[in-house]
Image (cartoon, rainbow over all chains, first blue to last red; front, side, top):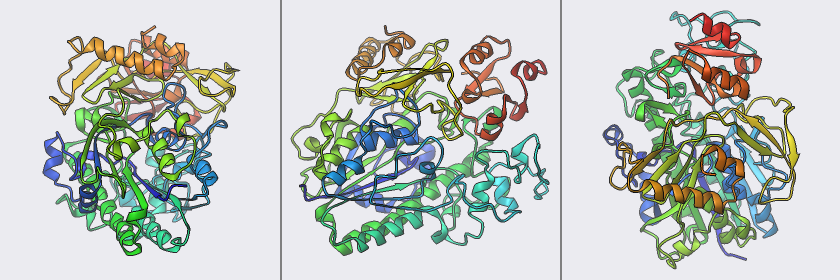
Length: 527
Length: 64
């Protein structure tokens, strides 16, 4: 058995360029000068991975990669743990390792996400983030926050009277037909007074307490799945005013912008509003950082650093007006979203305090954690363990990282060039899953897929699955190719140039290695 | 991607409807989710110039 504990901390939607440990190509980010002293200090003592990329997007697909080692974007989207999956906490149990989940990530308890928390020996869930279906009171919630999360109250600050059949739930905080009403958040946080009431402070302080209360166990794996800094970007003080001179309670200033274009449609946003959103995002980053110090300070007190591997990462970034986009919309998968932070502390690694240039990917965390825990299953993972890098045995790690969204364009990088390859917009996306999950309405009720057929379609399991079609999400009008060394802002499209053919071949090699279904080659024009 | 202020949600269309919208005269931009999940589950809708419009796509687009 390995002697190390593992503390895996994922901070949702954390842009790496908001951390002092990473550079930013964007002046507006540099101008914010976001305070992250805890993570900066951790980065100085840990290994900082400079070329780390996501795999399957967004939130739950990333977690399925971390927990099961399945890079699923070629086969299915956001959905439950599959019947043939063996989760990381299951494998850790078999190695006699205590497992614990600390989280405020409410998606675990929605449609389309079962199987992600059940295998831990214990889990603690802080209720109320985003539209967690938690509180239904008070009947008339805070009108200022209602407007800041997107309700149109006719400017008079008074919620319109509700009732069944109202046409537009965005004007009615009493609408009961909405599946994921934004009023849930406003009611959930009703009565919150200071930062100790908010989500990251609760999750991270309770994690510190868990470490102290479980000191006697011989070995443990603790996954801290912190949903902040995910929207809504609603901050307590002092963070709400830390990066803006605006009144954070101005009802005209949004904390929950719609995803999409910033210059058109329902996601259109003014410069003033955008500046405020960016400031609130920055405030959340600093709030998470400050409360993470509780965890690290407790590790100091308990003397845990010499027996614990600590991994800090994120599932993806978040567009905040970059390239004219907000959120995680249907748009090209720039590095803002896809090049994520990865900081690893390993008490016996010679790479501590160094930067790691090698190309790595989120799915590599799965076999890495199994290896550290002394659990089996690493050989079956789509990822590759980072331990040879951390031991100083290798300087390189993988030739490609394939990443993106199911049913969309597909991206590949060699660590320098990022190549975004379009799909045929007239070809359907095909979903392969053991359940008739919703290919796009991930968190809503399911519906029967009458056109589905079933069979042994997957290269990594003999388990039969459903196969059914859905509309694609094309994202790209043509290929995009960027040299991220020379052009970290990804502004000069090199498609058609000298590197295009090589990166296209690298994409095919990645699809071949993963044994992608034939239909993927066809819809990508690579057959 | 389109500059059109008409937006549809990938979850709100089947593949055939998706194809029809692509072929329609009105330029419709698609997002995989428009954050209107209750309306989306109830039936067809579009967001036109930022405003939600319920109804069959052809009817909504004919209004434009």
